[in-house]
Length: 463
Ligand SMILES: Cc1ncc(COP(=O)(O)O)c(C=O)c1O
Image (cartoon, rainbow, N blue to C red; front, side, top):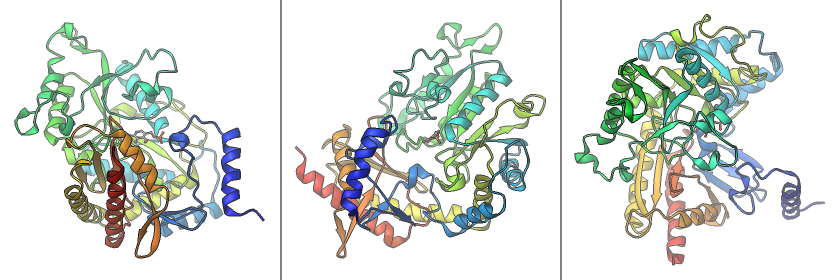
Protein backbone atom coordinates (compact mmCIF):
# COMPACT_ATOMS: atom_id res chain seq x y z
CA UNK A 1 0.00 0.00 0.00
CA UNK A 2 1.26 3.51 -0.83
CA UNK A 3 1.58 5.69 2.27
CA UNK A 4 0.32 9.29 2.02
CA UNK A 5 3.87 10.60 2.25
CA UNK A 6 5.12 8.42 -0.59
CA UNK A 7 1.97 9.11 -2.65
CA UNK A 8 2.65 12.86 -2.39
CA UNK A 9 6.30 12.30 -3.31
CA UNK A 10 5.18 10.16 -6.26
CA UNK A 11 2.76 12.84 -7.48
CA UNK A 12 5.35 15.58 -7.20
CA UNK A 13 7.85 13.52 -9.16
CA UNK A 14 5.33 12.81 -11.95
CA UNK A 15 4.31 16.47 -11.96
CA UNK A 16 7.93 17.53 -12.28
CA UNK A 17 8.34 15.33 -15.34
CA UNK A 18 5.02 15.65 -17.13
CA UNK A 19 3.21 18.87 -16.18
CA UNK A 20 4.04 22.18 -17.78
CA UNK A 21 5.56 24.65 -15.37
CA UNK A 22 3.92 27.48 -17.31
CA UNK A 23 1.01 27.93 -14.93
CA UNK A 24 1.37 29.31 -11.39
CA UNK A 25 1.85 26.04 -9.47
CA UNK A 26 5.59 26.55 -9.12
CA UNK A 27 5.23 29.93 -7.46
CA UNK A 28 5.70 27.69 -4.39
CA UNK A 29 8.42 25.02 -4.08
CA UNK A 30 7.53 22.25 -3.62
CA UNK A 31 3.94 22.71 -4.83
CA UNK A 32 1.18 22.02 -2.34
CA UNK A 33 -1.22 19.09 -2.76
CA UNK A 34 -4.76 19.19 -1.31
CA UNK A 35 -7.20 16.32 -1.24
CA UNK A 36 -10.46 17.65 0.19
CA UNK A 37 -12.39 20.83 0.96
CA UNK A 38 -15.40 22.04 2.95
CA UNK A 39 -16.74 25.50 3.76
CA UNK A 40 -13.73 27.74 4.45
CA UNK A 41 -11.20 24.89 4.59
CA UNK A 42 -8.90 22.90 2.35
CA UNK A 43 -7.45 19.64 3.69
CA UNK A 44 -4.10 18.05 2.92
CA UNK A 45 -3.44 14.30 2.76
CA UNK A 46 -2.94 14.14 6.55
CA UNK A 47 -6.34 15.68 7.14
CA UNK A 48 -4.85 18.98 8.40
CA UNK A 49 -7.33 21.83 7.84
CA UNK A 50 -6.06 24.95 6.05
CA UNK A 51 -8.23 27.99 6.64
CA UNK A 52 -8.60 29.49 3.19
CA UNK A 53 -8.61 33.28 3.09
CA UNK A 54 -8.51 33.59 -0.67
CA UNK A 55 -11.13 31.07 -1.85
CA UNK A 56 -9.70 30.43 -5.30
CA UNK A 57 -9.14 34.16 -5.95
CA UNK A 58 -12.76 34.81 -5.03
CA UNK A 59 -14.17 32.15 -7.39
CA UNK A 60 -15.50 30.02 -4.52
CA UNK A 61 -17.12 32.93 -2.68
CA UNK A 62 -20.05 30.87 -1.43
CA UNK A 63 -17.89 28.29 0.32
CA UNK A 64 -16.41 24.98 -0.74
CA UNK A 65 -19.02 22.29 -1.35
CA UNK A 66 -21.84 24.79 -0.91
CA UNK A 67 -24.76 22.32 -0.50
CA UNK A 68 -27.28 24.33 -2.49
CA UNK A 69 -24.95 25.00 -5.43
CA UNK A 70 -23.57 21.47 -5.44
CA UNK A 71 -27.12 20.12 -5.53
CA UNK A 72 -27.92 22.32 -8.54
CA UNK A 73 -24.91 20.85 -10.35
CA UNK A 74 -25.80 17.27 -9.43
CA UNK A 75 -29.40 17.73 -10.58
CA UNK A 76 -28.24 19.05 -13.90
CA UNK A 77 -25.81 16.14 -14.30
CA UNK A 78 -28.83 13.82 -14.06
CA UNK A 79 -31.09 15.89 -16.30
CA UNK A 80 -29.32 17.75 -19.11
CA UNK A 81 -25.56 17.51 -18.56
CA UNK A 82 -24.58 18.10 -22.18
CA UNK A 83 -25.92 20.22 -24.98
CA UNK A 84 -24.19 21.86 -27.90
CA UNK A 85 -24.19 25.59 -27.30
CA UNK A 86 -26.00 26.26 -30.58
CA UNK A 87 -29.22 24.98 -28.96
CA UNK A 88 -31.13 26.68 -26.20
CA UNK A 89 -31.83 25.52 -22.67
CA UNK A 90 -33.83 27.25 -19.98
CA UNK A 91 -31.05 28.01 -17.50
CA UNK A 92 -29.01 29.98 -20.01
CA UNK A 93 -31.93 32.24 -20.85
CA UNK A 94 -32.84 32.67 -17.19
CA UNK A 95 -29.29 33.58 -16.14
CA UNK A 96 -29.02 36.13 -18.94
CA UNK A 97 -32.43 37.62 -18.12
CA UNK A 98 -31.68 37.92 -14.42
CA UNK A 99 -28.35 39.69 -15.00
CA UNK A 100 -29.82 41.99 -17.65
CA UNK A 101 -32.89 42.76 -15.54
CA UNK A 102 -30.70 43.52 -12.53
CA UNK A 103 -28.68 45.99 -14.64
CA UNK A 104 -31.86 47.51 -16.03
CA UNK A 105 -33.21 48.04 -12.53
CA UNK A 106 -29.92 49.28 -11.09
CA UNK A 107 -28.70 51.46 -13.95
CA UNK A 108 -31.89 52.09 -15.90
CA UNK A 109 -30.21 50.71 -19.03
CA UNK A 110 -31.44 47.86 -21.22
CA UNK A 111 -28.79 45.38 -22.31
CA UNK A 112 -27.99 41.80 -23.25
CA UNK A 113 -25.73 39.06 -21.94
CA UNK A 114 -23.22 36.99 -23.91
CA UNK A 115 -21.56 33.90 -22.39
CA UNK A 116 -18.16 32.28 -22.60
CA UNK A 117 -16.14 29.92 -20.35
CA UNK A 118 -13.25 31.68 -18.56
CA UNK A 119 -12.73 35.28 -17.52
CA UNK A 120 -10.04 36.05 -20.09
CA UNK A 121 -12.27 34.73 -22.86
CA UNK A 122 -15.09 37.01 -21.78
CA UNK A 123 -12.58 39.88 -21.85
CA UNK A 124 -11.72 38.88 -25.44
CA UNK A 125 -15.42 39.01 -26.32
CA UNK A 126 -15.73 42.46 -24.76
CA UNK A 127 -12.77 43.63 -26.87
CA UNK A 128 -14.55 42.38 -29.98
CA UNK A 129 -17.70 44.26 -29.02
CA UNK A 130 -15.77 47.49 -28.40
CA UNK A 131 -13.78 47.16 -31.64
CA UNK A 132 -16.91 46.36 -33.62
CA UNK A 133 -18.93 49.24 -32.20
CA UNK A 134 -16.28 51.96 -32.14
CA UNK A 135 -14.08 50.85 -35.03
CA UNK A 136 -11.11 51.39 -32.69
CA UNK A 137 -8.73 48.70 -31.50
CA UNK A 138 -6.78 50.63 -28.85
CA UNK A 139 -7.87 50.79 -25.21
CA UNK A 140 -7.05 52.68 -22.07
CA UNK A 141 -6.45 50.56 -18.99
CA UNK A 142 -4.95 51.08 -15.55
CA UNK A 143 -1.49 50.49 -14.18
CA UNK A 144 -1.91 47.64 -11.72
CA UNK A 145 -4.88 46.34 -13.73
CA UNK A 146 -5.28 42.64 -14.49
CA UNK A 147 -7.66 41.32 -17.13
CA UNK A 148 -6.25 37.87 -17.90
CA UNK A 149 -3.53 36.15 -19.90
CA UNK A 150 -4.90 35.33 -23.33
CA UNK A 151 -3.21 37.51 -25.93
CA UNK A 152 -5.97 40.13 -26.10
CA UNK A 153 -6.34 40.28 -22.32
CA UNK A 154 -2.54 40.48 -21.87
CA UNK A 155 -2.50 43.52 -24.14
CA UNK A 156 -4.67 45.44 -21.68
CA UNK A 157 -3.09 43.96 -18.52
CA UNK A 158 -0.49 46.26 -17.07
CA UNK A 159 2.27 43.79 -16.23
CA UNK A 160 4.93 43.57 -18.97
CA UNK A 161 6.01 40.24 -17.44
CA UNK A 162 2.94 38.64 -19.02
CA UNK A 163 3.80 39.99 -22.51
CA UNK A 164 7.57 39.90 -22.57
CA UNK A 165 8.02 36.51 -24.25
CA UNK A 166 5.26 36.81 -26.81
CA UNK A 167 6.32 39.32 -29.41
CA UNK A 168 4.94 42.69 -30.33
CA UNK A 169 1.58 43.77 -28.95
CA UNK A 170 0.41 46.36 -31.46
CA UNK A 171 -2.77 46.83 -29.48
CA UNK A 172 -1.09 47.27 -26.10
CA UNK A 173 -3.22 49.55 -23.94
CA UNK A 174 -2.24 53.03 -22.88
CA UNK A 175 -1.88 52.56 -19.13
CA UNK A 176 -3.13 55.34 -16.89
CA UNK A 177 -2.11 55.55 -13.17
CA UNK A 178 -4.76 54.03 -10.89
CA UNK A 179 -5.86 56.11 -7.90
CA UNK A 180 -3.88 54.03 -5.42
CA UNK A 181 -3.82 56.56 -2.60
CA UNK A 182 -1.54 54.64 -0.18
CA UNK A 183 1.12 54.74 -2.92
CA UNK A 184 -0.02 57.80 -4.84
CA UNK A 185 1.72 57.75 -8.25
CA UNK A 186 2.16 61.52 -7.93
CA UNK A 187 3.35 61.45 -4.31
CA UNK A 188 0.30 63.38 -3.08
CA UNK A 189 -1.96 62.96 -0.04
CA UNK A 190 -5.63 62.16 -0.54
CA UNK A 191 -6.72 64.85 1.97
CA UNK A 192 -5.34 67.61 -0.22
CA UNK A 193 -4.91 66.16 -3.74
CA UNK A 194 -8.35 67.07 -5.17
CA UNK A 195 -8.02 63.96 -7.35
CA UNK A 196 -5.06 65.42 -9.22
CA UNK A 197 -4.56 62.09 -11.04
CA UNK A 198 -7.93 62.48 -12.75
CA UNK A 199 -6.99 65.98 -13.88
CA UNK A 200 -3.88 64.50 -15.44
CA UNK A 201 -5.98 62.06 -17.42
CA UNK A 202 -8.42 64.77 -18.51
CA UNK A 203 -5.50 66.94 -19.67
CA UNK A 204 -4.58 64.34 -22.29
CA UNK A 205 -7.45 65.72 -24.34
CA UNK A 206 -6.28 69.34 -24.25
CA UNK A 207 -3.92 69.07 -27.21
CA UNK A 208 -3.58 66.76 -30.19
CA UNK A 209 0.10 66.57 -29.27
CA UNK A 210 -0.73 64.66 -26.11
CA UNK A 211 -1.32 61.75 -28.50
CA UNK A 212 -4.83 60.50 -27.84
CA UNK A 213 -7.29 63.04 -29.29
CA UNK A 214 -7.87 64.75 -32.62
CA UNK A 215 -9.76 67.94 -31.80
CA UNK A 216 -10.57 68.71 -35.46
CA UNK A 217 -12.28 65.39 -36.02
CA UNK A 218 -13.36 65.23 -32.37
CA UNK A 219 -12.11 61.66 -32.36
CA UNK A 220 -10.23 59.65 -29.78
CA UNK A 221 -7.81 56.92 -30.82
CA UNK A 222 -9.00 54.74 -27.92
CA UNK A 223 -12.29 52.84 -27.93
CA UNK A 224 -12.79 52.02 -24.27
CA UNK A 225 -11.33 52.39 -20.82
CA UNK A 226 -11.01 49.05 -18.97
CA UNK A 227 -11.48 49.46 -15.24
CA UNK A 228 -11.66 47.40 -12.09
CA UNK A 229 -13.79 49.10 -9.42
CA UNK A 230 -11.46 47.53 -6.85
CA UNK A 231 -8.18 46.26 -8.29
CA UNK A 232 -7.91 42.51 -7.74
CA UNK A 233 -4.49 41.14 -8.63
CA UNK A 234 -3.22 44.71 -8.25
CA UNK A 235 -3.66 44.28 -4.49
CA UNK A 236 -7.32 44.94 -3.59
CA UNK A 237 -6.77 48.63 -4.04
CA UNK A 238 -9.88 50.60 -3.11
CA UNK A 239 -10.11 53.84 -5.08
CA UNK A 240 -11.83 57.12 -4.13
CA UNK A 241 -15.34 57.34 -5.58
CA UNK A 242 -14.82 60.87 -6.95
CA UNK A 243 -12.10 59.66 -9.30
CA UNK A 244 -14.48 57.48 -11.24
CA UNK A 245 -17.26 60.03 -11.40
CA UNK A 246 -14.87 62.41 -13.13
CA UNK A 247 -13.53 59.60 -15.30
CA UNK A 248 -17.05 58.87 -16.52
CA UNK A 249 -17.49 62.54 -17.47
CA UNK A 250 -14.19 62.65 -19.35
CA UNK A 251 -15.01 59.43 -21.19
CA UNK A 252 -18.49 60.66 -22.10
CA UNK A 253 -17.09 63.91 -23.45
CA UNK A 254 -14.72 62.00 -25.72
CA UNK A 255 -16.95 59.06 -26.69
CA UNK A 256 -14.90 56.46 -24.84
CA UNK A 257 -16.75 53.43 -23.51
CA UNK A 258 -16.18 52.16 -19.98
CA UNK A 259 -15.73 48.40 -19.60
CA UNK A 260 -16.06 47.32 -15.99
CA UNK A 261 -14.19 44.10 -15.24
CA UNK A 262 -16.15 42.48 -12.39
CA UNK A 263 -14.58 39.04 -12.82
CA UNK A 264 -13.06 39.07 -9.34
CA UNK A 265 -15.19 41.64 -7.47
CA UNK A 266 -18.65 40.97 -8.90
CA UNK A 267 -21.45 39.11 -7.09
CA UNK A 268 -21.13 40.84 -3.70
CA UNK A 269 -17.40 40.48 -2.95
CA UNK A 270 -17.43 44.19 -2.01
CA UNK A 271 -20.92 44.12 -0.45
CA UNK A 272 -22.78 45.20 -3.60
CA UNK A 273 -23.92 43.07 -6.53
CA UNK A 274 -21.41 44.86 -8.78
CA UNK A 275 -18.37 46.51 -7.20
CA UNK A 276 -18.87 49.46 -9.55
CA UNK A 277 -22.03 50.35 -7.63
CA UNK A 278 -19.76 51.69 -4.90
CA UNK A 279 -18.44 54.24 -7.37
CA UNK A 280 -21.78 55.65 -8.49
CA UNK A 281 -21.17 55.32 -12.23
CA UNK A 282 -22.85 53.28 -14.96
CA UNK A 283 -20.50 51.27 -17.19
CA UNK A 284 -21.22 50.44 -20.82
CA UNK A 285 -20.09 46.83 -20.51
CA UNK A 286 -19.62 44.55 -17.52
CA UNK A 287 -17.49 41.41 -17.67
CA UNK A 288 -18.14 38.54 -15.23
CA UNK A 289 -16.72 35.14 -14.31
CA UNK A 290 -15.39 33.36 -11.23
CA UNK A 291 -18.00 33.41 -8.41
CA UNK A 292 -20.97 33.13 -10.77
CA UNK A 293 -20.60 29.35 -10.53
CA UNK A 294 -18.75 29.23 -7.19
CA UNK A 295 -15.83 27.63 -9.01
CA UNK A 296 -17.95 24.70 -10.22
CA UNK A 297 -18.33 24.13 -13.95
CA UNK A 298 -17.11 27.55 -15.09
CA UNK A 299 -18.93 30.05 -17.18
CA UNK A 300 -18.11 33.68 -17.78
CA UNK A 301 -19.82 36.37 -19.74
CA UNK A 302 -20.52 39.98 -20.36
CA UNK A 303 -23.40 42.38 -20.17
CA UNK A 304 -23.44 45.14 -22.79
CA UNK A 305 -25.63 48.18 -23.26
CA UNK A 306 -28.25 47.41 -25.91
CA UNK A 307 -26.87 49.50 -28.79
CA UNK A 308 -23.47 47.79 -28.49
CA UNK A 309 -24.92 44.31 -28.81
CA UNK A 310 -28.13 44.47 -30.83
CA UNK A 311 -28.58 41.48 -33.16
CA UNK A 312 -27.70 43.79 -36.07
CA UNK A 313 -24.56 45.15 -34.38
CA UNK A 314 -23.33 41.79 -33.09
CA UNK A 315 -24.94 39.22 -35.40
CA UNK A 316 -25.01 35.41 -35.01
CA UNK A 317 -21.53 33.85 -35.09
CA UNK A 318 -19.70 37.04 -34.03
CA UNK A 319 -17.92 34.96 -31.42
CA UNK A 320 -18.23 31.37 -30.23
CA UNK A 321 -16.76 28.77 -27.92
CA UNK A 322 -17.86 25.12 -27.73
CA UNK A 323 -18.33 25.19 -23.95
CA UNK A 324 -19.84 28.66 -23.56
CA UNK A 325 -23.13 28.72 -21.63
CA UNK A 326 -22.71 25.01 -20.86
CA UNK A 327 -25.69 23.46 -19.12
CA UNK A 328 -23.83 22.55 -15.91
CA UNK A 329 -22.40 26.03 -15.46
CA UNK A 330 -25.64 27.84 -16.21
CA UNK A 331 -27.54 25.59 -13.78
CA UNK A 332 -25.18 26.59 -10.98
CA UNK A 333 -25.18 30.23 -12.07
CA UNK A 334 -28.97 30.30 -11.97
CA UNK A 335 -28.96 28.88 -8.45
CA UNK A 336 -26.33 31.45 -7.42
CA UNK A 337 -28.48 34.30 -8.73
CA UNK A 338 -31.58 32.92 -6.99
CA UNK A 339 -29.60 32.72 -3.76
CA UNK A 340 -28.49 36.33 -4.17
CA UNK A 341 -32.09 37.40 -4.67
CA UNK A 342 -33.39 35.46 -1.66
CA UNK A 343 -30.73 36.28 0.90
CA UNK A 344 -29.42 39.68 1.91
CA UNK A 345 -25.81 39.25 0.78
CA UNK A 346 -25.22 42.99 0.94
CA UNK A 347 -25.79 42.92 4.71
CA UNK A 348 -24.05 39.56 5.24
CA UNK A 349 -20.87 40.59 3.42
CA UNK A 350 -20.70 44.08 4.92
CA UNK A 351 -21.17 42.79 8.48
CA UNK A 352 -18.64 40.00 8.12
CA UNK A 353 -16.23 42.32 6.32
CA UNK A 354 -16.45 44.98 9.06
CA UNK A 355 -15.75 42.37 11.74
CA UNK A 356 -12.79 40.99 9.78
CA UNK A 357 -11.38 44.47 9.16
CA UNK A 358 -11.57 45.26 12.90
CA UNK A 359 -9.47 42.15 13.50
CA UNK A 360 -6.98 43.24 10.84
CA UNK A 361 -6.68 46.68 12.44
CA UNK A 362 -5.83 45.07 15.77
CA UNK A 363 -3.32 42.88 13.99
CA UNK A 364 -1.72 45.98 12.50
CA UNK A 365 -1.49 47.55 15.95
CA UNK A 366 0.33 44.46 17.18
CA UNK A 367 2.71 44.33 14.19
CA UNK A 368 3.34 47.92 13.07
CA UNK A 369 6.89 47.01 12.03
CA UNK A 370 5.57 44.58 9.37
CA UNK A 371 2.11 45.79 8.39
CA UNK A 372 2.06 49.12 6.55
CA UNK A 373 -1.66 49.24 5.85
CA UNK A 374 -4.84 47.22 6.18
CA UNK A 375 -8.03 48.11 4.37
CA UNK A 376 -11.17 46.51 3.05
CA UNK A 377 -14.53 46.90 1.41
CA UNK A 378 -17.00 44.12 2.12
CA UNK A 379 -15.04 40.88 2.13
CA UNK A 380 -12.30 42.19 -0.17
CA UNK A 381 -9.56 42.87 2.37
CA UNK A 382 -5.88 43.75 2.16
CA UNK A 383 -2.71 43.67 4.23
CA UNK A 384 0.38 45.53 2.94
CA UNK A 385 3.56 43.96 4.24
CA UNK A 386 6.23 46.63 4.62
CA UNK A 387 9.63 47.29 6.11
CA UNK A 388 9.93 48.93 9.54
CA UNK A 389 9.23 52.38 8.01
CA UNK A 390 5.66 51.21 7.35
CA UNK A 391 5.90 51.98 3.63
CA UNK A 392 8.75 50.25 1.78
CA UNK A 393 7.27 47.03 0.35
CA UNK A 394 8.74 43.83 1.80
CA UNK A 395 8.18 41.24 -0.89
CA UNK A 396 10.63 38.75 0.54
CA UNK A 397 8.87 38.68 3.90
CA UNK A 398 5.48 38.40 2.16
CA UNK A 399 6.68 35.30 0.31
CA UNK A 400 7.96 33.80 3.55
CA UNK A 401 4.66 34.38 5.36
CA UNK A 402 2.78 32.84 2.43
CA UNK A 403 5.02 29.75 2.44
CA UNK A 404 4.88 29.43 6.25
CA UNK A 405 1.06 29.42 6.13
CA UNK A 406 1.15 26.45 3.80
CA UNK A 407 3.37 24.38 6.08
CA UNK A 408 0.30 23.41 8.11
CA UNK A 409 2.07 23.65 11.46
CA UNK A 410 0.21 26.52 13.11
CA UNK A 411 -1.78 25.68 16.20
CA UNK A 412 -4.96 26.76 17.92
CA UNK A 413 -6.72 25.01 20.83
CA UNK A 414 -4.52 21.95 20.38
CA UNK A 415 -5.42 21.56 16.67
CA UNK A 416 -2.91 21.94 13.82
CA UNK A 417 -3.85 24.37 11.03
CA UNK A 418 -2.52 25.82 7.84
CA UNK A 419 -3.44 29.17 6.33
CA UNK A 420 -4.07 29.74 2.63
CA UNK A 421 -3.21 33.26 1.51
CA UNK A 422 -2.77 34.94 -1.84
CA UNK A 423 -0.11 37.47 -2.72
CA UNK A 424 -0.85 40.39 -5.01
CA UNK A 425 -0.06 44.04 -5.41
CA UNK A 426 2.24 46.13 -7.60
CA UNK A 427 5.23 45.05 -5.49
CA UNK A 428 3.90 41.59 -4.55
CA UNK A 429 3.75 42.61 -0.92
CA UNK A 430 -0.01 42.54 -0.39
CA UNK A 431 -2.13 39.74 1.01
CA UNK A 432 -5.38 39.97 -0.90
CA UNK A 433 -7.94 38.35 1.35
CA UNK A 434 -11.22 37.12 -0.09
CA UNK A 435 -12.69 34.83 2.58
CA UNK A 436 -15.78 32.74 2.00
CA UNK A 437 -19.12 34.54 2.47
CA UNK A 438 -19.96 31.63 4.79
CA UNK A 439 -17.08 32.47 7.15
CA UNK A 440 -18.23 32.52 10.79
CA UNK A 441 -17.12 34.83 13.61
CA UNK A 442 -15.17 31.93 15.12
CA UNK A 443 -13.40 31.32 11.82
CA UNK A 444 -12.63 35.02 11.50
CA UNK A 445 -11.17 35.02 15.03
CA UNK A 446 -9.15 31.96 14.07
CA UNK A 447 -7.92 33.72 10.92
CA UNK A 448 -6.65 36.67 12.96
CA UNK A 449 -5.06 34.33 15.51
CA UNK A 450 -3.25 32.35 12.79
CA UNK A 451 -2.14 35.51 11.00
CA UNK A 452 -0.83 36.79 14.34
CA UNK A 453 1.19 33.59 14.79
CA UNK A 454 2.60 33.87 11.27
CA UNK A 455 3.57 37.53 11.64
CA UNK A 456 5.18 36.86 15.05
CA UNK A 457 7.13 33.91 13.63
CA UNK A 458 8.57 35.79 10.63
CA UNK A 459 9.21 39.03 12.49
CA UNK A 460 11.38 37.15 14.97
CA UNK A 461 13.43 35.82 12.04
CA UNK A 462 13.61 39.10 10.09
CA UNK A 463 17.15 40.19 9.30
C1 LIG B 1 -10.22 41.23 -12.68
C2 LIG B 1 -9.90 40.01 -13.46
N1 LIG B 1 -10.10 39.99 -14.78
C3 LIG B 1 -9.84 38.90 -15.52
C4 LIG B 1 -9.34 37.76 -14.96
C5 LIG B 1 -9.05 36.55 -15.82
O1 LIG B 1 -9.98 35.54 -15.56
P1 LIG B 1 -9.59 34.01 -15.84
O2 LIG B 1 -8.43 33.71 -14.95
O3 LIG B 1 -10.83 33.23 -15.50
O4 LIG B 1 -9.22 33.92 -17.28
C6 LIG B 1 -9.11 37.73 -13.59
C7 LIG B 1 -8.54 36.53 -12.94
O5 LIG B 1 -7.97 36.56 -11.88
C8 LIG B 1 -9.39 38.88 -12.81
O6 LIG B 1 -9.19 38.90 -11.49
